[in-house]
Length: 436
Image (tube, rainbow, N blue to C red; front, side, top):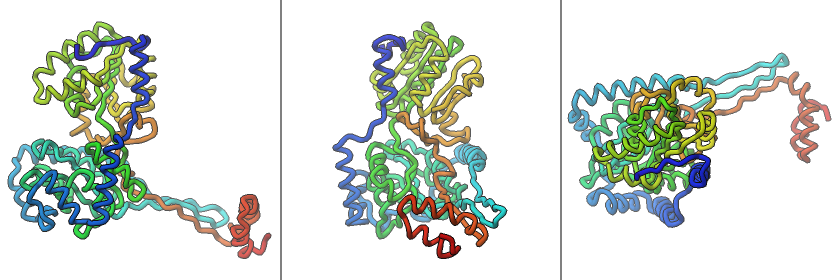
């Protein structure tokens, strides 16, 4: 059996739940060490090291001259895609723009009666690096990643948006990626992937100027590189394998649930497809559907490995328990496939994205619904959010005191400063007000 349903109260169920609550993990020590070496190499040798890595792992004939996608390549890409793709791309862009435009933040100021002014200034960062994985050597271009990374940065007002994506063996990028980038205003694109691309974005090379923020999904080397450069630059998140948790009552449709579990499982053998249901009968039907649908998938072996090693079907006593467990698991994608999903929505506190009802597959959120699909994984939805416009902005506090305001606050400021043993702080007020 691919997955054996188990009760949440059984010894096996408790063991599974304990693992799900504590599933955060960093890259293994070997990966960490390798990435540390790559970053140091890029910092020291710049373009020379970058080209060596690209030649070794992706494009044997790559040169510095061809590192950046040329205008000619961009024009050729536009001419090579069909109208159906362009129509779908236009719709996806419109939906994602419409959603993320509501995330804009405004600067604000408050004036007190004594003339003091305080506030917050909101500014975009100057530059952002947008990492887009290669997608099986360019055969399966991850167009949605281009849009989900690039559109929020555009809305935030980031002046320089740089896309990094690994080339195929011939040193080219799939035209669909180049068209998607151009359609949202990105033309600075480099043919580099993995940890060396992240290092180049963070520290810069002679060819590639460094950026302020790095976002986008990737394998464990990309994720570990982002973790190691965090602090020098902002990153979106430390992401793990993709995951879905489906909460289903007796009204759940087994074929839909199985299809959505498989949609996660086909990503990667490490992907995690989970279901908590209150119906033992439905649990059995889901297993049957998984076997039936699995045989029809182009990535069936990947999905089979994911399900057999990491797939979970748990039987809960009621929806109260199921939602409680969902909040503890804090999944990247949470589907409420129950009779009244909006009634239970108010009980959900921790999830990257929530999908309501039987007609809302997670794949709708991946591509066309509008919300971002770059989401917290490994339980980090307890404290982290989806990538959005706020990822690309920073906020500065604003303070302006009048003479009257400083006189009024002088004693309080000095009291706190002296309490902390900072007499120079106290004096900087006293020297202006004459009050000690």
